[in-house]
Length: 235
Image 1 (cartoon, rainbow, N blue to C red):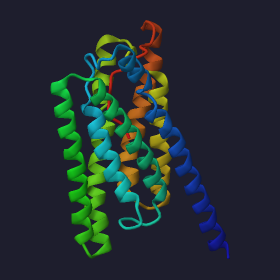
Image 2: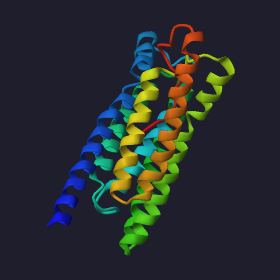
Image 3: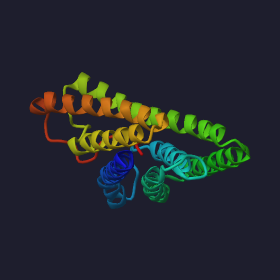
């Protein structure tokens, strides 16, 4: 009886932190909105790159697929957050293609088709793997690698902050959202005994702490925070 109550409480707590992770992730998903307002206003993508959004879309799609019942057990909240993330990335890519130069339109369309093709291949190959554990390992390793590389992308920003001693290109709320989302899914992965969730999000939590520490260390020496942060990939 006690074990049943404990298990139920753990399940409720796990779902709660998973839902919290979905909410915190929304801060990441909307962070490029000021940049795209500028792009729409100027009818130009200027010096901005669309590559991070293409990569973020692939990352979201792979992790979304990992969270489905066909691949892993009881990870539906991983699927929901990455489904929303994929939708946001697709909108950003479409806007980028709309307002960029003609030669970049062709390249971005090609990259978008490549992402769809790669994801389709991953889905098709994984469905051919009959053993559930082997299927989860295959998709999980791909998802873990994608998440780790995504969380490692802020290393460029961290290096820039240290060199310039300025947080101009590292908005506080973006760093805070990254930390809160990573911490939530770190706890979610631990409670679900899923290393493909808690390992990359553990790395994300550490990097989030580093970003917040740098922000508070250099915010006094920085000028006004940039309204258009550097475009970095996220999920």
